[in-house]
View 1 (tube, rainbow, N blue to C red):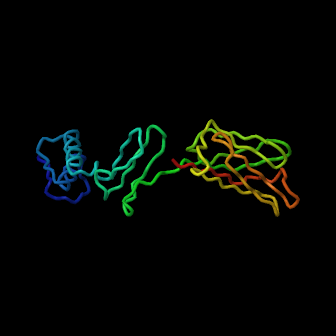
View 2: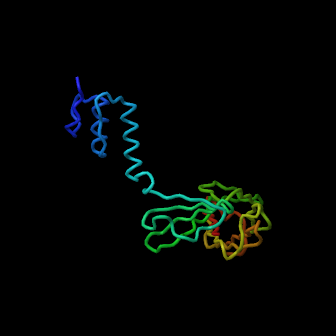
Length: 202
């Protein structure tokens, strides 16, 4: 018995071949008598590719340099990966410009007594960060040269002690120094699941 593909609405009792045939028709293809599930799926994939849906929904490129020219279609989302630096750039359609995505390190820090801060890492696209206690209320975040230059990064931090403060500064490409204070000056025991965030831009 021939399959009926003239009705494009799914009906109770439709088998797989009938449903796939209806889907193919909706995509502008033509099912034939004798089509199997496999052949119908192949036709649907071909119709999907021919329509440009797969290529036009998102554009991706990569190279060893940052992007400069617009993507092939400036009116569609695009992303570029710099293989040399590991930075990702997103195409902003409204401003017609490539926008770098910063590498992010985000953690909750806790420090007590004379111990180094301990981190609960929430997000990390930057790399390995370790911590040390330098002096009372003074600590360092250390890496293998991940912090680039002071005008290419930002550090955000909080502390949990009443009336105290938090400050941080770029030391070297491998070290950020940060301090916590209480009402009487530099002090330990001021970090308790306190947010610490590093943003690095290309």
